[in-house]
Image (cartoon, rainbow, N blue to C red):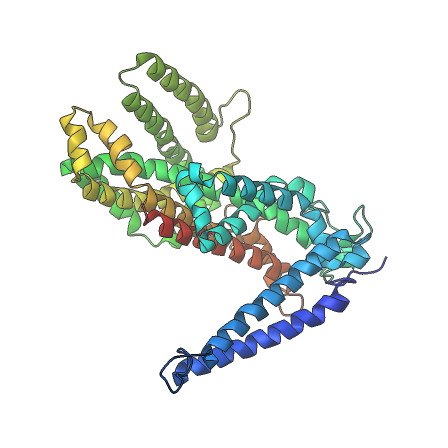
Length: 468
């Protein structure tokens, strides 16, 4: 079986265009920098009558940067699109073959953007995100990896744990004696498919980071609201314990909490029992404060929350779910609890500070005058007006958590040795990095792109939230 090239047949035409566009882009960037340093980056030169006509050299350099970047981008898109319609992977190349395998993601992204842009005026802050170019780019990158995690079983070409001895450290596009005839991004040191492990690794990362960050926010919000609103001894006690946790270096605290020896002490079970009860408390207080005058709705919502919450709580914290719906492996529990425990104090400090600032506003005083209870004011007056900074911090915190999970995987902590998560894959590939860089570079680029997308998304949300 013939090995694949990167660009296939379309690369014969578009690859030279891409190379020329990149060279022009690099020269234009250098020229722009030199003109800026020389002070020739302003408007065009004035005529005899004082009017300014034409463009300055700096403006021409800027236009060259824009159009050369656009040409490079269109060349890449053209190679992907051309490869996707080629009759065989040999003609499509590696880029084209990957574009074909990722078809569920393209469809999901198109549907998401079309519907979101169509109804963006009805979607609040999420809809306003599509007025920000930076926010849309970040959202697209993040959703790319979210859909990758969702459709991973359809996208992968091989079992991420299967080994083919003849393909150890083989380069990208190598032919494989299997159902799918190629390793699109090559093989690792054990002969496993790097492309499939990268795709499945997205699921390993995204099934921990967002959910654990959400739990941490529920803990931080539940404790931060009363601490900031009431102050006094309650604030002093909670703040003391939060500062105690924050005093430890984050990576060292993670390292201590996810080591296999810590599981024997039962500390992860104790932490899970304490931390996992906070979402139930938060939701029960939320429904009770909102529907305290409508006992039928209040009892319904609180009852459903207790029923489902305690069912999930028994399975996640103590592995006692009789139906087996809610369960978590010991290694995964260690990592999940560690993320929640480490992030909760930071969220608490942010929420506490926001509440102390917002509680002096006029609409809070108006709620107090109407006779509203403290929890109603905290949850339905103060918290909605603090959503902007909290949403931004949520996105950034997922990015930090993703990096920390990758670091733990790199050290071989918290996950099984053969896990396809990106940190473990980078650690496996680094051992032969000088000879075979692709097994480590591919997951590293995936991790970098996800964190970049989260940061861009946070920037877009921050930009739009400031307009409210």
